[in-house]
Image 1 (cartoon, one colour):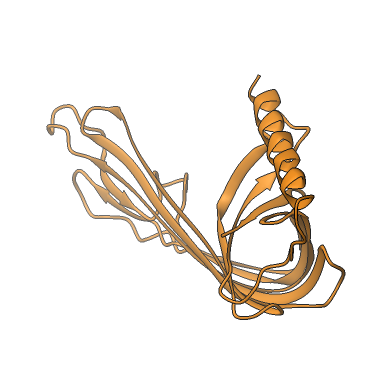
Image 2 (cartoon, rainbow, N blue to C red; image 1 turned 180 degrees about the vertical axis):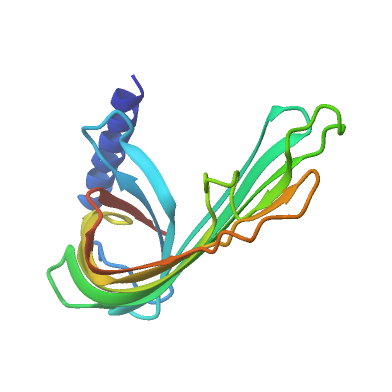
Length: 223
């Protein structure tokens, strides 16, 4: 039902847009100072519209645009009273695009973007000494084994993509990229209820270089 409703709303929006387009000549592509916002669009999935992170663009002129993505996540759970597992993650993706002439509706582009992501995790047991476990707190993860381990990620990508303006102020797009990511895992420090704390579990690092592809269509709106 949700899939049918979302698809119906999208079709209605496009139909209204085409009806308005037929009344006058329109310029489909964004002008200077135009602002866009995007979501992921998978018309044949159970969840047609989804958001990995909020994505925005502001156009300097018809051929160039700043882009910015942001994602903020917070998780705090207490399966047992006074026993808390929490994590916080923030991701920032600034970038820049250069658009080509294309056609009246098609706007191909290349661009660059960076990725800066930080995740922190912790565990605390604030129960009375007679009822708590052997661990009072953990920083860097939810447990000594590294569940929900924190990390810092740095990356950069060269991008190629295209936007197709279905009607004025509404477009679908695809994008591919090639770049690198460096992920540094957080150290895990454990504070026991009693005794000497063990040595921190030092985090390692992972470096990746290669292509990346958003399998979803980008459904965007121009403001």
